[in-house]
Image 1 (tube, rainbow, N blue to C red):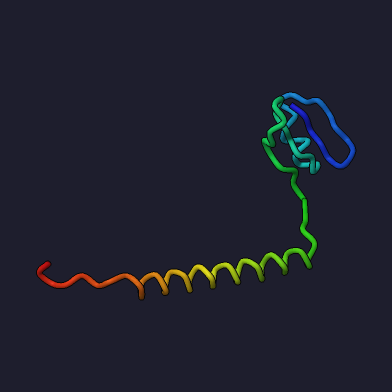
Image 2: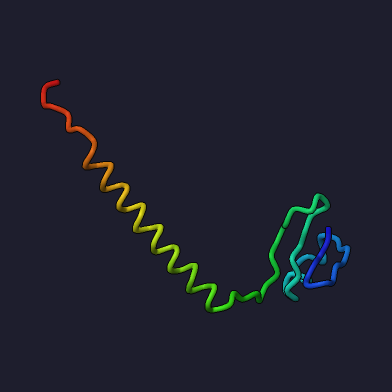
Length: 80
């Protein structure tokens, strides 16, 4: 396993994962797949607000598409 943060990289074993994770290191397995993210990371406020606005816009598009889909669906006749 590897612990990475910035330009630092350490080879660690499974018993060391919590300590490195608490220090903010991302943990990768031997195949390079992320196992755990380091704690204490933050996202810049501007990026957060941009993502929040995009999320709201996409939710509105989904809602519009769903309402349009229900309007276009033909109603079944009774007794058919």
